[in-house]
Amino acid sequence: MTAVGPITVLVAKFDHRYGDAEAARAYDIIVRAGGRYIGVEASPRHRVLNACFRSASDATRAAVEIAYLVIGRACPSENPLAGLRIALYTADAQEDLERSPETMVLCTTNLLARAEPGQILLTAPTAVVAGPTLPPGIQLLDRGLWTPSPSAPTERIYQMSISGPEKDGIAGSNLGWARRAVHGHGDTPAADVQTVVKSVHNAWQQTLTGRAQLILLSGGRPESRIACAAEAALRLHAEGALVLYGRWVRDAQVPYRAFRDALGFYASRIGTDQLIADLEGWADKIARLLPEVGTRVGGPHLAQAASDVDRARIFEAVETWVRAIAKRTPMVVVLDDAHWAEPASVLLLAHLWHTCRRHRLTLLITGEADAGNPLNRLMDLATHIDADGVERIRL
Image 1 (cartoon, rainbow, N blue to C red):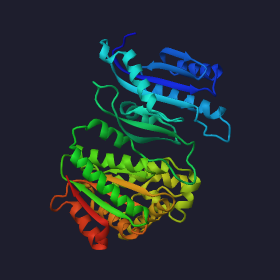
Image 2: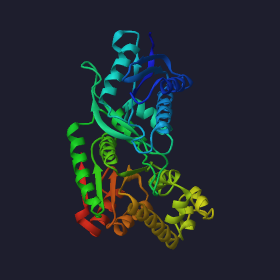
Image 3: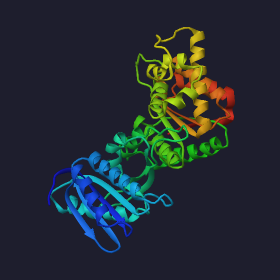
Image 4: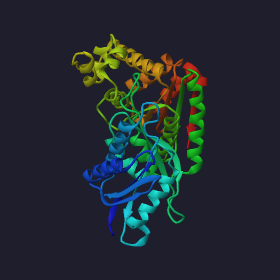
Protein backbone atom coordinates (compact mmCIF):
# COMPACT_ATOMS: atom_id res chain seq x y z
CA MET A 1 0.00 0.00 0.00
CA THR A 2 1.52 3.31 -1.08
CA ALA A 3 0.21 6.87 -1.00
CA VAL A 4 1.43 10.42 -1.55
CA GLY A 5 -0.05 13.47 0.14
CA PRO A 6 -1.99 13.93 3.38
CA ILE A 7 -3.95 10.98 4.67
CA THR A 8 -5.73 10.34 7.95
CA VAL A 9 -5.68 6.96 9.65
CA LEU A 10 -8.52 5.87 11.91
CA VAL A 11 -8.17 3.00 14.38
CA ALA A 12 -11.23 1.96 16.38
CA LYS A 13 -11.15 -0.66 19.15
CA PHE A 14 -14.29 -2.29 20.57
CA ASP A 15 -13.89 -4.24 23.79
CA HIS A 16 -15.42 -7.62 24.72
CA ARG A 17 -18.93 -6.27 25.24
CA TYR A 18 -19.31 -5.76 21.49
CA GLY A 19 -19.31 -8.46 18.87
CA ASP A 20 -19.26 -8.97 15.12
CA ALA A 21 -22.52 -7.10 14.55
CA GLU A 22 -21.18 -3.80 15.92
CA ALA A 23 -17.87 -4.27 14.09
CA ALA A 24 -19.75 -4.89 10.83
CA ARG A 25 -21.81 -1.72 11.27
CA ALA A 26 -18.65 0.27 12.01
CA TYR A 27 -17.08 -1.23 8.87
CA ASP A 28 -20.05 0.01 6.83
CA ILE A 29 -19.72 3.49 8.36
CA ILE A 30 -16.05 3.61 7.37
CA VAL A 31 -16.80 2.53 3.81
CA ARG A 32 -19.55 5.12 3.40
CA ALA A 33 -17.22 7.84 4.71
CA GLY A 34 -14.58 7.00 2.10
CA GLY A 35 -12.23 4.79 4.10
CA ARG A 36 -9.83 2.55 2.18
CA TYR A 37 -7.40 -0.27 2.98
CA ILE A 38 -9.63 -1.35 5.87
CA GLY A 39 -8.10 -3.84 8.26
CA VAL A 40 -10.08 -5.94 10.74
CA GLU A 41 -8.77 -7.85 13.74
CA ALA A 42 -11.06 -10.01 15.89
CA SER A 43 -10.43 -11.89 19.12
CA PRO A 44 -12.53 -12.94 22.13
CA ARG A 45 -11.41 -9.77 23.91
CA HIS A 46 -11.77 -7.10 21.25
CA ARG A 47 -12.49 -6.03 17.68
CA VAL A 48 -10.13 -3.56 15.96
CA LEU A 49 -10.70 -1.74 12.67
CA ASN A 50 -8.24 0.53 10.89
CA ALA A 51 -8.63 2.51 7.67
CA CYS A 52 -7.02 5.31 5.65
CA PHE A 53 -8.87 8.43 4.47
CA ARG A 54 -7.90 11.13 1.99
CA SER A 55 -9.88 13.65 4.07
CA ALA A 56 -9.44 14.35 7.78
CA SER A 57 -13.04 15.56 7.87
CA ASP A 58 -14.28 12.26 6.42
CA ALA A 59 -12.28 10.28 8.97
CA THR A 60 -13.58 12.42 11.82
CA ARG A 61 -17.15 12.05 10.59
CA ALA A 62 -16.69 8.28 10.60
CA ALA A 63 -15.37 8.43 14.18
CA VAL A 64 -18.40 10.46 15.28
CA GLU A 65 -20.82 8.03 13.63
CA ILE A 66 -19.10 5.05 15.23
CA ALA A 67 -19.33 6.78 18.60
CA TYR A 68 -23.05 7.41 18.11
CA LEU A 69 -23.43 3.74 17.15
CA VAL A 70 -21.92 2.71 20.48
CA ILE A 71 -23.93 5.30 22.43
CA GLY A 72 -27.11 3.88 20.93
CA ARG A 73 -26.20 0.36 22.07
CA ALA A 74 -25.07 1.25 25.60
CA CYS A 75 -27.03 0.45 28.74
CA PRO A 76 -28.48 3.54 30.45
CA SER A 77 -26.60 2.77 33.67
CA GLU A 78 -23.08 2.88 32.20
CA ASN A 79 -20.76 5.28 30.42
CA PRO A 80 -22.13 5.05 26.87
CA LEU A 81 -18.66 5.06 25.31
CA ALA A 82 -16.91 2.87 27.88
CA GLY A 83 -16.36 -0.02 25.46
CA LEU A 84 -14.78 2.04 22.68
CA ARG A 85 -11.45 3.70 21.94
CA ILE A 86 -10.66 5.61 18.73
CA ALA A 87 -7.50 7.32 17.47
CA LEU A 88 -7.11 9.59 14.43
CA TYR A 89 -3.70 10.51 13.01
CA THR A 90 -3.00 12.77 10.01
CA ALA A 91 0.30 13.19 8.19
CA ASP A 92 1.76 13.53 4.70
CA ALA A 93 2.21 9.99 3.49
CA GLN A 94 5.14 9.39 1.13
CA GLU A 95 6.17 6.34 -0.82
CA ASP A 96 9.21 5.87 1.41
CA LEU A 97 9.00 3.88 4.60
CA GLU A 98 9.20 6.85 6.96
CA ARG A 99 5.74 8.14 6.06
CA SER A 100 4.13 5.08 4.52
CA PRO A 101 0.49 4.34 5.39
CA GLU A 102 1.63 1.19 7.17
CA THR A 103 3.86 3.27 9.43
CA MET A 104 1.05 5.73 9.99
CA VAL A 105 -1.25 2.89 11.06
CA LEU A 106 1.41 1.89 13.59
CA CYS A 107 1.64 5.48 14.88
CA THR A 108 -2.14 5.64 15.18
CA THR A 109 -2.15 2.37 17.10
CA ASN A 110 0.44 3.86 19.47
CA LEU A 111 -1.85 6.85 19.97
CA LEU A 112 -4.77 4.50 20.64
CA ALA A 113 -2.76 2.94 23.46
CA ARG A 114 -2.88 6.34 25.24
CA ALA A 115 -6.68 6.46 25.10
CA GLU A 116 -8.71 5.64 28.18
CA PRO A 117 -11.97 3.70 27.77
CA GLY A 118 -14.47 5.93 26.01
CA GLN A 119 -11.89 8.37 24.64
CA ILE A 120 -11.44 9.53 21.05
CA LEU A 121 -7.99 11.05 20.50
CA LEU A 122 -6.83 12.96 17.43
CA THR A 123 -3.68 14.78 16.45
CA ALA A 124 -3.40 18.51 15.76
CA PRO A 125 -3.49 18.32 11.94
CA THR A 126 -6.74 16.35 12.18
CA ALA A 127 -8.22 18.79 14.69
CA VAL A 128 -7.28 21.88 12.68
CA VAL A 129 -8.96 20.59 9.52
CA ALA A 130 -11.94 18.76 11.01
CA GLY A 131 -12.67 20.93 14.06
CA PRO A 132 -14.83 23.51 12.24
CA THR A 133 -16.97 20.73 10.72
CA LEU A 134 -17.94 19.10 14.02
CA PRO A 135 -21.64 19.23 14.91
CA PRO A 136 -22.95 21.04 18.02
CA GLY A 137 -22.37 19.16 21.25
CA ILE A 138 -18.88 17.95 20.29
CA GLN A 139 -15.80 19.68 21.64
CA LEU A 140 -12.05 19.14 21.27
CA LEU A 141 -10.15 19.25 24.56
CA ASP A 142 -6.40 19.83 24.66
CA ARG A 143 -4.62 16.77 26.05
CA GLY A 144 -0.99 17.87 25.81
CA LEU A 145 1.86 16.66 23.63
CA TRP A 146 2.72 13.24 22.22
CA THR A 147 5.57 11.80 20.16
CA PRO A 148 4.42 9.31 17.47
CA SER A 149 7.81 7.59 17.24
CA PRO A 150 11.41 8.21 18.36
CA SER A 151 12.29 9.87 15.03
CA ALA A 152 9.07 11.89 14.65
CA PRO A 153 8.40 15.42 15.92
CA THR A 154 6.21 16.02 18.94
CA GLU A 155 2.54 16.66 18.19
CA ARG A 156 -0.35 18.06 20.17
CA ILE A 157 -3.29 15.75 20.75
CA TYR A 158 -6.94 16.49 21.47
CA GLN A 159 -9.76 14.48 22.97
CA MET A 160 -13.11 14.59 21.20
CA SER A 161 -15.77 15.04 23.87
CA ILE A 162 -19.24 13.95 22.74
CA SER A 163 -21.84 15.28 25.13
CA GLY A 164 -24.83 15.73 22.83
CA PRO A 165 -26.65 19.02 22.30
CA GLU A 166 -25.69 21.89 24.60
CA LYS A 167 -27.53 21.74 27.88
CA ASP A 168 -28.37 24.16 30.66
CA GLY A 169 -27.91 27.22 28.46
CA ILE A 170 -24.20 26.66 27.76
CA ALA A 171 -22.87 26.77 24.21
CA GLY A 172 -19.57 25.57 22.82
CA SER A 173 -16.33 27.54 22.59
CA ASN A 174 -14.86 28.82 19.35
CA LEU A 175 -11.31 27.47 19.34
CA GLY A 176 -10.49 26.88 15.69
CA TRP A 177 -8.24 29.95 15.81
CA ALA A 178 -6.39 28.53 18.83
CA ARG A 179 -5.75 25.12 17.27
CA ARG A 180 -4.43 26.78 14.11
CA ALA A 181 -2.23 29.15 16.10
CA VAL A 182 -0.48 26.55 18.25
CA HIS A 183 -0.12 24.15 15.32
CA GLY A 184 1.26 26.72 12.90
CA HIS A 185 3.66 28.64 15.14
CA GLY A 186 5.79 26.09 16.89
CA ASP A 187 8.74 28.51 16.83
CA THR A 188 7.24 30.68 19.59
CA PRO A 189 9.75 30.75 22.49
CA ALA A 190 8.80 28.24 25.16
CA ALA A 191 9.62 30.77 27.89
CA ASP A 192 7.04 33.18 26.47
CA VAL A 193 4.41 30.45 26.33
CA GLN A 194 5.10 29.36 29.90
CA THR A 195 4.96 32.94 31.18
CA VAL A 196 1.62 33.63 29.55
CA VAL A 197 0.05 30.29 30.49
CA LYS A 198 1.10 30.66 34.13
CA SER A 199 -0.14 34.25 34.39
CA VAL A 200 -3.46 33.51 32.70
CA HIS A 201 -3.98 30.40 34.79
CA ASN A 202 -3.34 32.33 38.00
CA ALA A 203 -5.82 34.97 36.87
CA TRP A 204 -8.31 32.22 36.07
CA GLN A 205 -8.18 30.99 39.65
CA GLN A 206 -9.30 34.45 40.75
CA THR A 207 -12.02 34.42 38.11
CA LEU A 208 -13.43 31.18 39.51
CA THR A 209 -13.99 32.93 42.84
CA GLY A 210 -16.14 35.57 41.14
CA ARG A 211 -13.50 38.26 40.62
CA ALA A 212 -13.06 39.28 36.98
CA GLN A 213 -9.56 39.61 35.54
CA LEU A 214 -8.19 41.66 32.63
CA ILE A 215 -4.87 40.73 31.01
CA LEU A 216 -3.07 42.72 28.32
CA LEU A 217 -0.66 40.65 26.22
CA SER A 218 1.67 42.78 24.08
CA GLY A 219 5.15 42.75 22.55
CA GLY A 220 6.77 40.05 20.42
CA ARG A 221 5.61 39.08 16.95
CA PRO A 222 1.85 39.00 16.27
CA GLU A 223 2.14 35.26 15.55
CA SER A 224 3.80 34.67 18.92
CA ARG A 225 1.22 36.72 20.80
CA ILE A 226 -1.69 34.81 19.40
CA ALA A 227 0.10 31.46 19.84
CA CYS A 228 0.64 32.24 23.54
CA ALA A 229 -2.96 33.36 23.97
CA ALA A 230 -4.11 30.22 22.16
CA GLU A 231 -2.07 27.94 24.42
CA ALA A 232 -3.60 29.55 27.49
CA ALA A 233 -7.11 29.37 26.01
CA LEU A 234 -6.77 25.67 25.17
CA ARG A 235 -5.55 24.89 28.68
CA LEU A 236 -8.43 26.75 30.33
CA HIS A 237 -10.98 25.21 27.97
CA ALA A 238 -9.74 21.76 28.99
CA GLU A 239 -10.41 22.81 32.61
CA GLY A 240 -14.00 23.78 31.82
CA ALA A 241 -13.88 27.38 30.62
CA LEU A 242 -16.16 28.72 27.93
CA VAL A 243 -13.78 30.46 25.49
CA LEU A 244 -15.00 33.10 23.04
CA TYR A 245 -12.74 34.81 20.50
CA GLY A 246 -12.94 37.97 18.42
CA ARG A 247 -10.50 40.08 16.45
CA TRP A 248 -10.22 43.62 15.22
CA VAL A 249 -8.96 44.30 11.69
CA ARG A 250 -7.06 47.30 10.42
CA ASP A 251 -9.21 49.92 8.67
CA ALA A 252 -12.36 47.82 9.14
CA GLN A 253 -15.54 49.84 8.77
CA VAL A 254 -17.49 47.56 11.14
CA PRO A 255 -17.71 48.93 14.69
CA TYR A 256 -17.32 46.54 17.62
CA ARG A 257 -15.81 43.98 15.24
CA ALA A 258 -14.26 41.70 17.88
CA PHE A 259 -17.42 41.69 20.01
CA ARG A 260 -19.50 40.78 16.97
CA ASP A 261 -17.17 37.83 16.28
CA ALA A 262 -17.21 36.49 19.83
CA LEU A 263 -20.86 36.98 20.72
CA GLY A 264 -22.06 36.12 17.23
CA PHE A 265 -20.39 32.71 17.46
CA TYR A 266 -21.87 32.12 20.90
CA ALA A 267 -25.34 33.02 19.66
CA SER A 268 -24.99 30.60 16.75
CA ARG A 269 -24.44 27.73 19.18
CA ILE A 270 -27.10 28.49 21.78
CA GLY A 271 -30.81 27.83 21.67
CA THR A 272 -33.26 30.60 20.83
CA ASP A 273 -35.15 30.15 24.12
CA GLN A 274 -31.96 30.81 26.07
CA LEU A 275 -31.16 33.85 23.93
CA ILE A 276 -34.60 35.26 24.59
CA ALA A 277 -34.16 34.73 28.34
CA ASP A 278 -30.71 36.36 28.34
CA LEU A 279 -31.72 39.35 26.22
CA GLU A 280 -35.19 40.04 27.58
CA GLY A 281 -35.83 43.75 27.09
CA TRP A 282 -32.67 44.27 25.03
CA ALA A 283 -33.54 42.72 21.67
CA ASP A 284 -33.70 46.06 19.84
CA LYS A 285 -30.24 47.07 21.08
CA ILE A 286 -28.60 43.73 20.29
CA ALA A 287 -30.19 43.95 16.84
CA ARG A 288 -27.99 47.00 16.19
CA LEU A 289 -24.91 44.95 17.00
CA LEU A 290 -25.96 41.57 15.58
CA PRO A 291 -29.01 41.82 13.31
CA GLU A 292 -29.26 38.05 12.93
CA VAL A 293 -29.50 37.63 16.71
CA GLY A 294 -32.05 40.42 16.91
CA THR A 295 -34.18 38.58 14.36
CA ARG A 296 -34.11 35.38 16.42
CA VAL A 297 -35.16 37.10 19.65
CA GLY A 298 -37.71 39.44 18.11
CA GLY A 299 -35.69 42.61 17.69
CA PRO A 300 -36.18 44.88 14.68
CA HIS A 301 -33.69 45.43 11.87
CA LEU A 302 -32.20 48.83 12.69
CA ALA A 303 -29.48 50.99 11.24
CA GLN A 304 -26.28 51.35 13.24
CA ALA A 305 -26.79 53.78 16.10
CA ALA A 306 -24.67 56.92 16.24
CA SER A 307 -25.93 58.88 19.24
CA ASP A 308 -24.30 58.70 22.65
CA VAL A 309 -27.60 57.65 24.25
CA ASP A 310 -28.07 54.72 21.86
CA ARG A 311 -24.43 53.71 22.30
CA ALA A 312 -24.83 53.63 26.08
CA ARG A 313 -27.88 51.39 25.71
CA ILE A 314 -25.94 49.01 23.44
CA PHE A 315 -23.24 48.85 26.13
CA GLU A 316 -25.88 47.93 28.71
CA ALA A 317 -27.30 45.24 26.42
CA VAL A 318 -23.87 43.63 25.92
CA GLU A 319 -23.18 43.88 29.65
CA THR A 320 -26.49 42.18 30.46
CA TRP A 321 -25.74 39.38 28.00
CA VAL A 322 -22.17 38.75 29.22
CA ARG A 323 -23.25 38.74 32.85
CA ALA A 324 -26.03 36.24 32.08
CA ILE A 325 -23.52 33.90 30.42
CA ALA A 326 -20.95 34.28 33.20
CA LYS A 327 -23.57 33.38 35.82
CA ARG A 328 -24.03 29.99 34.12
CA THR A 329 -20.42 29.21 33.27
CA PRO A 330 -17.01 30.82 33.87
CA MET A 331 -15.81 32.38 30.63
CA VAL A 332 -12.69 33.65 28.89
CA VAL A 333 -13.06 36.27 26.17
CA VAL A 334 -9.98 36.61 23.95
CA LEU A 335 -9.93 39.85 21.94
CA ASP A 336 -7.11 39.99 19.43
CA ASP A 337 -5.29 42.91 17.74
CA ALA A 338 -6.91 45.47 20.00
CA HIS A 339 -4.55 48.18 18.72
CA TRP A 340 -6.92 48.35 15.71
CA ALA A 341 -9.98 48.87 17.91
CA GLU A 342 -12.03 52.02 17.29
CA PRO A 343 -12.79 54.34 20.25
CA ALA A 344 -16.31 52.93 20.76
CA SER A 345 -14.88 49.41 21.25
CA VAL A 346 -12.42 50.70 23.84
CA LEU A 347 -15.25 52.33 25.75
CA LEU A 348 -17.31 49.13 25.56
CA LEU A 349 -14.37 47.14 26.95
CA ALA A 350 -13.97 49.61 29.81
CA HIS A 351 -17.71 49.43 30.48
CA LEU A 352 -17.63 45.62 30.66
CA TRP A 353 -14.67 45.73 32.98
CA HIS A 354 -16.45 48.21 35.24
CA THR A 355 -19.78 46.37 35.39
CA CYS A 356 -18.63 42.73 35.38
CA ARG A 357 -15.88 42.86 38.01
CA ARG A 358 -17.83 40.55 40.34
CA HIS A 359 -18.49 37.93 37.69
CA ARG A 360 -16.61 34.86 36.45
CA LEU A 361 -14.99 36.58 33.48
CA THR A 362 -11.42 36.78 32.20
CA LEU A 363 -10.67 39.28 29.43
CA LEU A 364 -7.47 38.43 27.55
CA ILE A 365 -6.56 41.32 25.24
CA THR A 366 -3.70 41.12 22.74
CA GLY A 367 -2.08 43.84 20.68
CA GLU A 368 0.67 46.43 20.38
CA ALA A 369 0.70 48.79 23.37
CA ASP A 370 2.52 51.65 21.65
CA ALA A 371 2.15 55.22 22.84
CA GLY A 372 -1.08 56.82 21.72
CA ASN A 373 -2.88 53.69 20.52
CA PRO A 374 -6.22 52.41 21.90
CA LEU A 375 -4.63 49.80 24.17
CA ASN A 376 -2.98 52.40 26.37
CA ARG A 377 -6.27 54.24 26.70
CA LEU A 378 -7.97 50.98 27.68
CA MET A 379 -5.37 50.09 30.27
CA ASP A 380 -5.52 53.57 31.80
CA LEU A 381 -9.29 53.21 32.16
CA ALA A 382 -9.11 49.62 33.46
CA THR A 383 -6.39 50.40 36.01
CA HIS A 384 -8.32 53.39 37.28
CA ILE A 385 -11.42 51.19 37.80
CA ASP A 386 -9.70 48.23 39.50
CA ALA A 387 -5.91 48.04 39.41
CA ASP A 388 -5.77 44.76 41.38
CA GLY A 389 -7.53 42.82 38.61
CA VAL A 390 -5.36 44.10 35.78
CA GLU A 391 -2.13 42.51 34.57
CA ARG A 392 0.23 43.44 31.75
CA ILE A 393 2.37 40.79 30.05
CA ARG A 394 4.95 41.89 27.50
CA LEU A 395 6.72 39.24 25.41
